[in-house]
Image 1: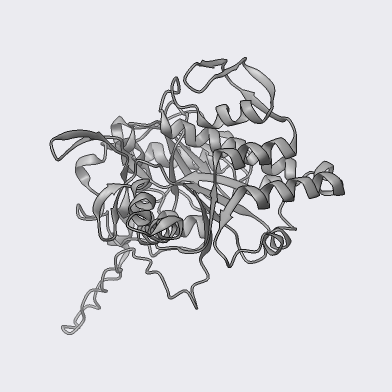
Image 2: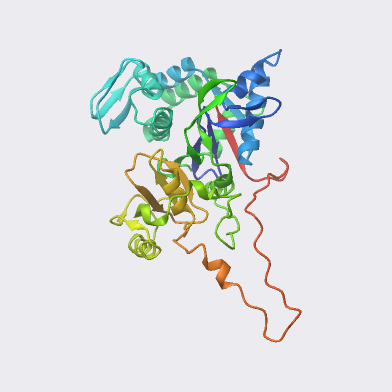
Length: 390
């Protein structure tokens, strides 16, 4: 599942992947994998509409977002859209040969036809992190497709544009309120470099026992979800007045600072911040890599290798509001965005509170900040909008 968030002016877009094996609460059915929600909703006469409704409700409860529209794309629909667009170029760091998905590509640039593209986005065998890496591949492919759709070669070619729109409209299922033309109009100012991809925060991929059976799941970091969503939407959540308590931030899963190596990259519009943040983190006791720079991005993001959730959480405590995502990195990597988030001491807020005035027996310490909770407003007033693509 992918949530697509579009601001009102349509000038940017964020794709948020939700792993299919995310262990979540499904209303009326208890805990299960996220991809079970559609099946449960479609049973007993619910059909596709019932499946979509329960899936959307589950995702809304998980993220706090209000989902406006639902789009379902079948494998055949995906094939038809890619076929209408024509060959799609991708660039691989390493060669791949996976008989399960029938994909065989060299390292470097390849042009994929519709059949190869379908195999490309379905591959998970042979990828280091399985389904999580498949999500990264799907995000990459969709960004390439978006770039192709938004290019002059498509938009200024009436015949090709008509073919693409016809393929899209005939290959997807949507809710009755979604108008593809209106959506395209809202996105008229969108440029390819304003499309961002991310994944909901997770804490690991454990194997649990359910009814006597071993089940591999993706454990969602629900405590980090409000801050993650706020970072995606460009809003903010109140910073904690003290280090996170065990009930919010399980200290058993957070690695000691001295064991964590972190590298800072500058994706902001300010000079020297990667080096200054590296120095700051070193002062806090972290091991640090060589600071560097990368493409400009809006949101400060903490990337980490799958299985290193404890290291990522240790770093996240010093970057309140930053997004967390699994990525193909060797160590925890902080990419500073234009949102201005910088490394800060989580203990500072507790010590910076003003002391009661001397001689005033009635004075009381300032109350601690409330927990970071972002409630979901009613649909009529909530400006946080998204569409979910399943």
